[in-house]
Figure 1 (cartoon, rainbow, N blue to C red):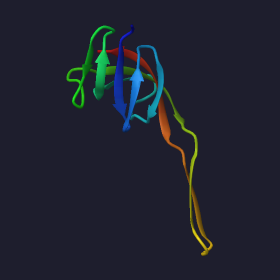
Figure 2: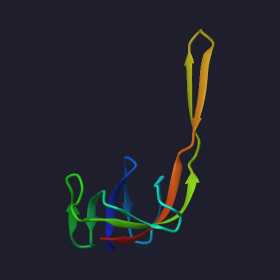
Figure 3: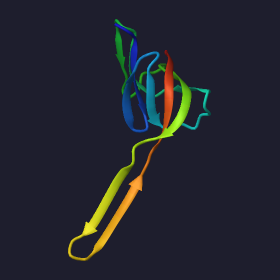
Figure 4: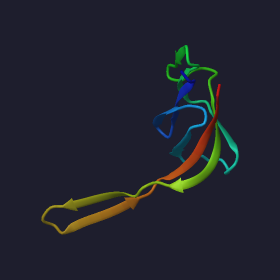
Length: 104
């Protein structure tokens, strides 16, 4: 079994392996640069599993930032009945596309 880690970023947890391409909430890192994330909830080397409370001490995941994109549009519609009061708001989240380089 391959090594993997559970990474927390942007309030979401993601299972990652070395070489995986992931989309996470935007990081303040330039394209082509490496980002080291220390918010690792669990890490496994293939035989043993370490689970943190809440994070594994000393564990980190290194990512290479490939680019930035925007997610799908989410629409929020609110209306008050019988009043003609309607509101439609759209939102697109900025995402960072990254490749997992190393799990330590």
